[in-house]
Image (cartoon, rainbow, N blue to C red):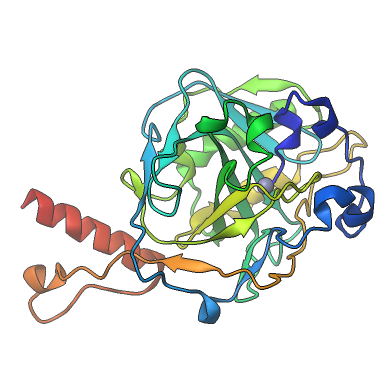
Length: 310
Ligand SMILES: [Zn+2]
């Protein structure tokens, strides 16, 4: 997770250079050698379902069209929004706290076989997006980084699709202008809403894993309430290639900008699944519509909306 580049705090904005993640515990010993580091492998058989359902995370302003800027940081493409920022709250987040959107960025690989930071049952995805939010009760992101509930990051995995993801064309088209201009911001040609970035969610994130972790780039602050969504985002091979064609200062392609998974060290990983709704019995009396996986998730949501309207 590349938070440091947006921070005004000098000590946190120190360049990491091209150091290898394996060297970070030595170069940045304060936190990178800590015991609650990210990313992690999520072993689904060991995830814990809390006795009390935390409910869905509410996404506020994710449906608002906003002016977006995108920058090639030399390590990733980072997007920020202008104006009143979207927020997230509820669900696994601390009751009463509101987390404001700061930026989003991606981690990807040189090939489809790797790229994501988090892995699920050791499965690596070709790309992962991090939507970074900070806890408004701390006033500034710099202050938030000092607290274990300072940041709330939502991660989504990508899966290669034979179809172009039309919502992403605006973004990848902008890459031609930031290809090797580190620090140059480019205003996107069209407005963006965060719902364009994420899978269809209708105002809430219902199914997710969550755990306590850290930034995945130095200085690796253990200040992140991590949430990894169960549903994935489709992206075409050509669109993925446009991420890989982004260049760093040295003119080399920005690829493999992920940190390897870190030890759990006894941390628990929780899962919150959307409760199985009995809507299928009403629509199709002989068959419950609860197909597993992302599609089942969307189908259940559609049926719920149909039921609501009907
Ligand atoms: Zn990240």
